Amino acid sequence: MPDTDFSSLNVLVVDDEVFMRQLIVRVLTEIGVKQIYDAENGNEGVTTLKNFGRTIDLVLCDLEMPEMDGFEFVRQVRGAANVPNPDVPVLIISGHTDEDHIRKAVELGIHGFVAKPVSRKLLEDRITAALTGSTIDPSLLGG
Image 1 (cartoon, rainbow, N blue to C red):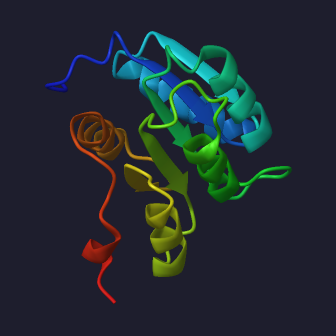
Image 2: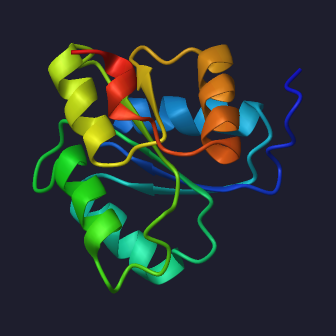
Image 3: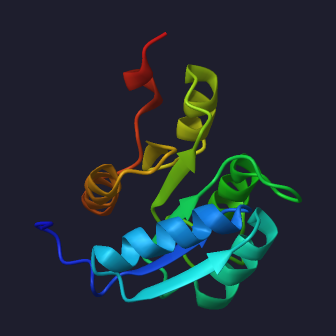
């Protein structure tokens, strides 16, 4: 059982793959999240944040999506004047685990990175860290 109570969280899941969105939603539900929004690309994700941004506590976002990828999504969230909560914690969930992808995402101000396939325990740990910590310092990646 997790030490963190996730029942009051409002989470936005942004992923173009229906199966992945359903999987992540199922895992979030299993760990106690009650309110979950979903979007199939970055454009929909930004729109959701514009509409519900003050109530969304966390975003889980894929990197590779059509229309607007995860990098551009994070850029827009962090830089848009019309997103009510530009500092919302963002966790990237991606199959791209090479250092360049991770570094680029970190430099945009993400709060964590979860490699696909998603493990329940790792997701719980990363959510807890994102909600209690700050963005990842790019210098921690070395290089």
